[in-house]
Amino acid sequence: MVLFGGAGDLTKRKLVPALFNLVKANLLPKDFAVLGFSVDELGLEQFRNQVTGFLPPSDRQTVAWEWFTERLHYARGDFADPDAFNALSNRLGELDVSYHTQGNYLFYLATASKFFAPIVQQLGRLGLSRQENGGWRRVVIEKPFGHDLESAQALNREIKGILDENQIYRIDHYLGKETVQNIMVFRFDNAIFEPLWNRRYIDHIQITNAETVGVERRGGYFDNAGTLRDMVPNHMMQLLSLTAMEPPVSFRADAVRNEQAKVLHAVQTLDSEEVLHSSVRGQYGEGVVETETVPGYRMEPGVSPESRTETFVALKLNIDNWRWAGVPFYLRTGKRLAKRHTEITIHFKQTPFELFRNAPFHKLHTNTLVIQIQPVEGISLSFGAKIPGAVLRVGSVDMSFEYSKYFGAEAYTGYEVLLYDCMIGDATLFQRADMVEAGWRVVNPVLDVWKALPPRRFPNYTAGSWGPRAADELMEHDHRQWRTIGA
Ligand code: BG6
Figure 1 (cartoon, rainbow, N blue to C red):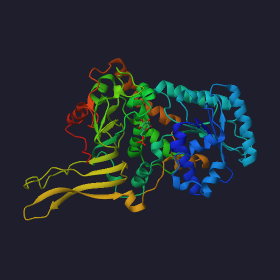
Figure 2 (cartoon, protein in one colour):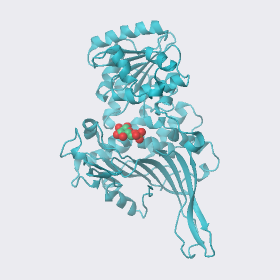
Figure 3 (cartoon, rainbow, N blue to C red):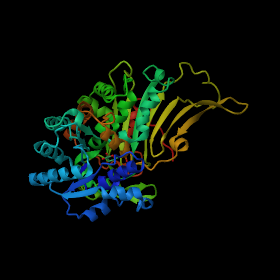
């Protein structure tokens, strides 16, 4: 496995810990080695110490740790330098012989996106992308995959000139989350929900991704991207497509991805007028998040003091198909919000006749099914129940399932399943070219209108709140409201 960007943050925080978890679970082949490749001048010991720095101290000096660290190697090189790739190719040849990896190479591009195409070019030039004599060559590509529809299409064209689609693994780490994978099991392995999963019974769907963090050390990247690009075409569209897709005919990669792509293509693209009514952008100002006073976005390192980049997005989308016609999907995602919380909520319709409407204290309620993605992972269903007592009162109660209570808490990074699947050649949890492009097709009109009409009142929400007032108005306009996410 070659880790381009081997000295970077993703390698240390996620990839190496995930690989190590695979070692502990006995899911890595014994003929295995990692070659970190990046521009940093590092000695072998330094590299090994650096990348294992995020492993829990209790795992150090164990047999598994020794086995793993012996297999970590490093080569220094500039991604723009063809000579560095010549040397890399020779080095790979040597490691292939020492570790009997039989020419099976997994290239992981954990680099800035501007290097994706040039690295693939170099792999092509050196024949490292050619699959022959039974060996496989696969390339994992991190996000951001393009910065709009056109650039994503161009990147697809470039890499597909060198690699077959089945060699390309476009990663979206949301698909590594247990609860995200569970959406499919929940929907298609239970007989009771799917019959209700349509316009006849569902009023609308909300998808919320709230973060309490700001831009951390990524101001430079983020200020050019913004929340719309950073979160919507990828993570939010994955959540939407898994919630809205038709049942696939099998669990094979293309059967699943065909259905995801189909529903993404059915998302109505907004015209300019609709962008004005169906989208909201926001940027946080100074505030208090979970008792800590934090600076406004414009004060963050790497961010321009006059920045007009959005850190919050809310969208109302419609899907043009028989299942979802007339059922709006409301999406919101933002940084420095009140609470870290990601969920999908299915809001069912009112009963056709409100039998208890005249009961004293009757509170109007509807059934909601909440799929909680993080930090709590679980599913809960709320329904009306009689409150005990002589006077008829109806309230809302919950039936809920929490992953950790049933299965215990696992210290997984979410990358384990993705790396493992990639090694066994299962692309179900990776994005195909058409899916990535379909995601960009949805956000492109919003990008265009926002660019033409720069925001006038940024910052427009306080850090630690639930986003700009306009996001609530988006719902109020439709006589709905965002689900209250408790403390
Ligand atoms: C990344 C974005 O892809 O996802 C970040 O670039 C964001 O800006 C992160 O914070 C959210 O991931 P998670 O797993 O913490 O929800």
